[in-house]
Amino acid sequence: MAIDSPFDHRDKCAIVGIGATDFSKNSGRSDLTLATQAALAAIEDAGLSPRDIDGIVRCSHDTVYQHDLAHALGIPNVTFWCDVGPGGVAPAGMVGQAVAAILSGQATAVLVFRELNGRSGRRYGLAGATQPRVGGAGSYDEFFNPYGLLTPGQAFALIARRHMAEYGTTSEQLGHIAVICRKRANANPAAQMYGRPLSLEDYLNARMISDPLRLYDFCLETDGACAVVVTSTERARDLRNPPVLIRAVAQAGMPKPQPGLMFPVLMRDSITELPAKYAAETLYRRAGLGPADIDVAQLYDCFTITVLLELEDWGFCKKGEGGPFVASGAIDLDGEIPINTAGGHLSEGYIHGMNHVLEGVRQIRGTSTSQVPGAETCLVATTPLPPGSGLILRSDR
Image (cartoon, rainbow, N blue to C red):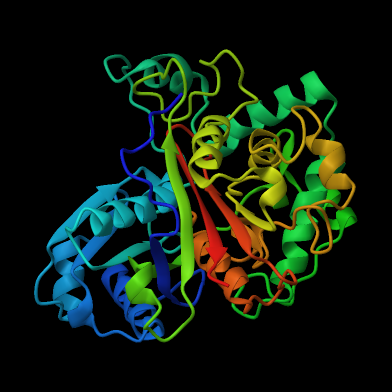
């Protein structure tokens, strides 16, 4: 069980500004340009100027560093900065670091950003070249790479197959996740898959990529950037938009971690369990809330199977019941727990969880293109691999 922080951070900080670039396959812009555009949009949305920003949090996978972004924005002095990572597990943790900086007095307004040319530049789903000799770089290098287990898609295919073997999960059930995310994207003009409907038949007829995962089980590769501005709730109430309160944040690893394993799918007692379970215990306790109190969720969907596992591990259904749960319509807009209401990584864009944070803010503001009526709490879960993180946003009403 994780140890709570020595102070109660419930509702003491808020997200006051959000910004994003367009999401595309070829941005034609540098990573720094993308980061700057998203940051300026978030600062403007907050009703602030770059001179008001004194903290910057970046993802450790970003190519843009804090001092470069500060220079591009014209920020005169950064009194707090840090890196959080890796990749997709970072966004909720990045917001958590902004909260810590503000509550500890190290900064007053913190910019949190994520940028990547994830299609035209570095493509995270591709395998790197294997070396002719192995050893000395961890178990993954020695026991997996030489035998062809090289990519995230292959690793999560093993997880999906195991879930099918243990619980009877079917491809059709995974397909419901892809179809529902596409429905949300078709209501969102900013989504990469806007105007491109997807039926369950389309899903099942798509080519197999890594059995049992098909084309539409995989997230998009995206060029783009997202940013948010975090400040104290007291200050937020004097700014342009109603504050979206950060009820609680949490980070968590897993028991018996495997150092050096980027995708430790074969080295755990249960490969159908994600860090979400451990982050959830801490986050719900810190928030004083539970799954029944969540109105809408933005779940990290690098693959359809991660959504199914997160629904189970965040307590929205019992372990092993994720397949029937999603097939029942429970994750649709009028369902028990609507998810990924901008289209998610599967159909909006893949900015490693940061676009989920932005959509969580929109849901609480009431400005989403697929708005959940009366939504007052939103879970944002960025936990595909250990370590993981999550946050709960809520209305100030």
